[in-house]
Figure 1 (cartoon, rainbow, N blue to C red):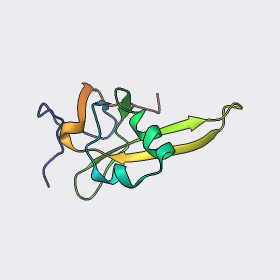
Figure 2 (cartoon, rainbow, N blue to C red):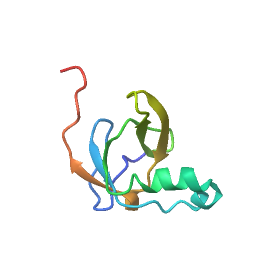
Figure 3 (cartoon, one colour):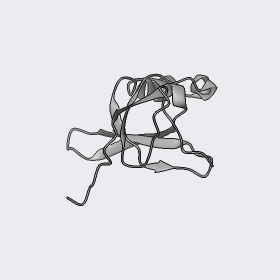
Figure 4 (cartoon, rainbow, N blue to C red):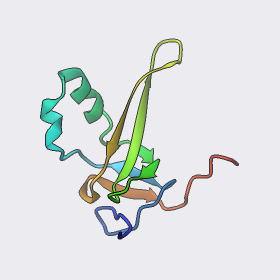
Length: 96
């Protein structure tokens, strides 16, 4: 399997940060208005690649928090090359 790449052809790996440029998935139309709005609010934000699945698709996740600071909802999205752009090729090390 070839390494996934962003819209510019830059390789993407777990721990890298990418900007979500847009969502081209047809499944968006099947979501409720609230879910769709939540996902579309992710466009333009920067996310760490959390995993690359068995098909070579990079995944990112966003959490939404309630007024007490508790995570109350999240979405994970598998991204296509045209939907992301690498902003920081350095792998984020959570253990530092």
